[in-house]
Image 1 (cartoon, rainbow, N blue to C red):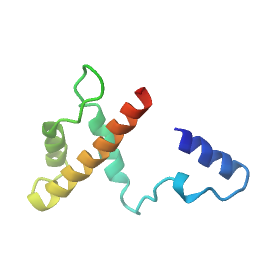
Image 2 (image 1 turned 45 degrees about the horizontal axis):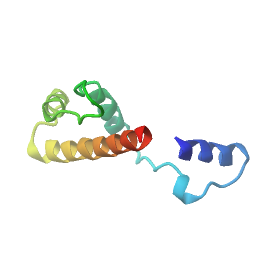
Image 3 (image 1 turned 135 degrees about the vertical axis):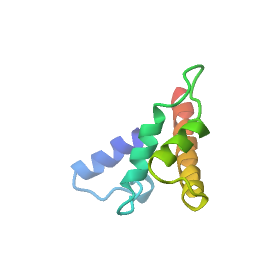
Length: 96
């Protein structure tokens, strides 16, 4: 969150933010991947701390949206798992 606040400060003051705090650039047409990740976040198990999105939830989502062949599912699964790892690491860092 501190990076976003710093980035906003630079933008609000009409200054160019340093590259290390700039948000990542979203490729055109990639918005559906972020939407998929946030939709799948609700399938996390509830318990002691951050838990990964279950593979079964990713597979169900992929099938529902026609990503059920290996050429479509495997990259989608890797993407969601990578995003999930980054999210869980951010949560663990924030929680201390």
